Amino acid sequence: MDSPYSHELQVAIRTVQSAAKISQAVLSSDDKGTVEKDDLSPVTIADFAIQALLTVTIHSVFPGDNFVGEESAADLRDNPLLLNRVWELLLRLQDDEVKSLCKLPRSPEEMCEMIDKCGFGEPGGPESGRVWVFDPIDGTKTFVRREAYAINVALLEGGKQVLSVVGCPTLPANTDGPIHNSTFDSTGLGSIVFAVKGHGTYVRPLVETSSEPVPRKLEPHAASASVADLRAVSCYHMLDSGVDDAHEAIMAKLGITTKGCDFLAWVLRWVTLGLGLANVTVWVYRKRERTGKIWDHAGAMLLFEEVGGKITDIDGKEIDLTAGRKLTENHGFVAAPRSIHDIVLKAVHDVLHEQGKANLLA
Image (cartoon, rainbow, N blue to C red; front, side):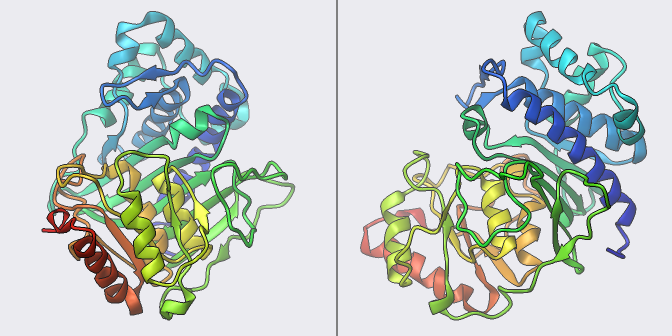
């Protein structure tokens, strides 16, 4: 791809490839070093190691940029055994091939510093400059079950998405779908889906083969569509934060009769929309105070927008990536083809009023 971000794209892709090796080493292990965070979500040794690798490598190339990531090193500092396991996981990458592609921390102390560089980072407002956003393992709950997960790397400029690189070790680069949590690429190659603002969305194998793969540019399938063309991706009966009966009623009102694609991880839902295996998703949180987290959405949303999709919250507001680590200026998500987004948004409002849940709207 010829774009102003060619160098950033090259660095991000090669780093995600090395990060995928870390994740796959842990994926096959029965003991993933899982601990529970304050919000009751799990984190594994792969999450910590990948965030360190992403930050050290990209910081070494772009030292003036800022960083935001999901994890902090607090659990590592409090647990020497866990710290040592993460450090040993990174040391496995110290072969000549990886050293030529990525930079590793020089010590466990630097590893923790780099993790915290993201873990305490804030995206900032329109004057914030360049900010990289990482989700080292999106879908940790399914990752622990040896199911689908993603490695999310995004670059923001002034709070706007300009680059997205998502590694999907379990998903094939060529599929007609539908795909879901238990989908597993039998070829073992996996996929990388990436986009640059104004230059489209592409897919290629994650693992290098004998010849350099030529990325395939995805058609702008969501630039124009009718309601009859709608195909959904969502997450039913796996998270207690969403209003499942409203989601199902909205799909029924839009005439969507099949479950379609189903993913726990938000990044993989955006990937599915970018690939054209679905073109609509809706998420209504049970409470107005519940919000998304920037690393689950930043960059990955660009994959859908670059094929003609439009994304707002359930109030119709643009997603504000400058609000902070949590998307406190937005409630939920409505993503649909640009040409019929207003119809989908109206269906959301109609169902919430019909179900007596209008309090969830602004």
